[in-house]
Length: 225
Image 1 (cartoon, helix red, strand yellow):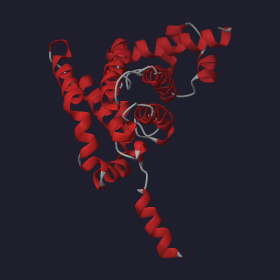
Image 2 (cartoon, helix red, strand yellow):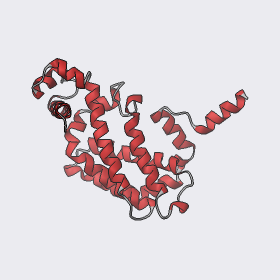
Image 3 (cartoon, one colour):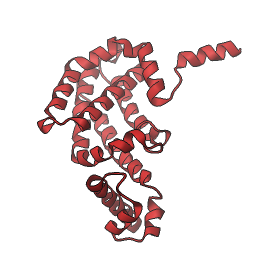
Image 4 (spheres, one colour):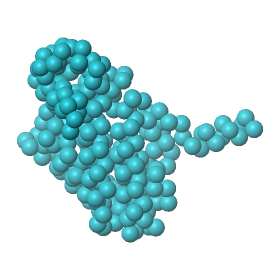
């Protein structure tokens, strides 16, 4: 690791620690620089805004989750998805406190919210891993033909579980574990057979990802022709 990489890592860890202690809004770049023992000018060189630290955290965690997805090689696609749920929570668990402190930023910050354009790389990385998880399963022929659409549905299910887990106040997040088991046992099949793979998924995707459904785009193209 180079000196610059070590400095960046130190700043990120200092920032995340302060976010956890003081909250996102209660932390300034000056605070982070002081905690890391560097000048404010050097802080700006690596992280010109607080949102940049959140994006760096997204980058780190989404890369770890995607790597775990790539190793979920046993069983059919539904079983692989169950493995993916457990793997994702295992990756996120050590960071739960700081992620909870960042909940407002996840939803409200225009440049670092979980569905903002700037965070698309994180969504696409994990979603692509879920698509490949379906495509590479031995029972892929029995799964819905459109693996990409199913992958998006699985991503939304995973995201819903993560948000539920962050808000879960039950002891040891026992409620989240029960929800995860329900998704493992019944949720994947329900997603494959249910309305999310019809027009419902397109509506949710348009609202969440800001993407226009393919069928609507084709109709618009036909009307212009």
